[in-house]
Amino acid sequence: MDQNYEGYENNVQCNFNLTILPKTVVLARADLPITFTTEFGVDYVKYNDDGNDVIFPRQKHYARDVYIFESNKNGTDKTVMWEFVSDGSIKGLGFHISFYAVRKFLF
Image (cartoon, rainbow, N blue to C red; front, side, top):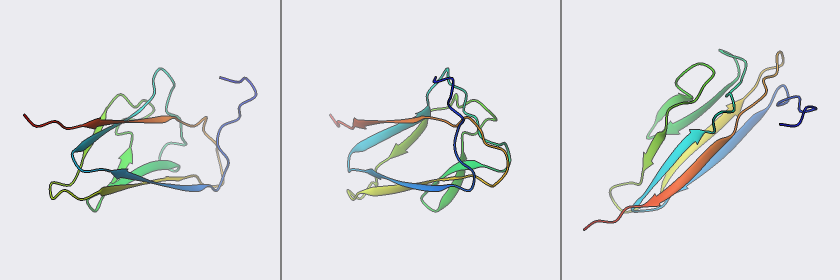
């Protein structure tokens, strides 16, 4: 990591729409050993999957979980909306989330 890196800015709102194609599974995880650092309880990353808002990661500070997103069973694209929000006080170092798409093969 760059020693001059100061993390993310205050008062930020970023959105990302993840489109999952039919017959595809997407895996998401925060890359380790980098610590997932946001101002706990205030700044957050969340995603909305089928109408449910979920804070990412589930554990404080470290994202050890792999999140699995499956395509819609009816053969249409599925959209998972991601959002990052920071307030105007303490800045965290940030995070890096990787997404891996895997095609489903039925035999």
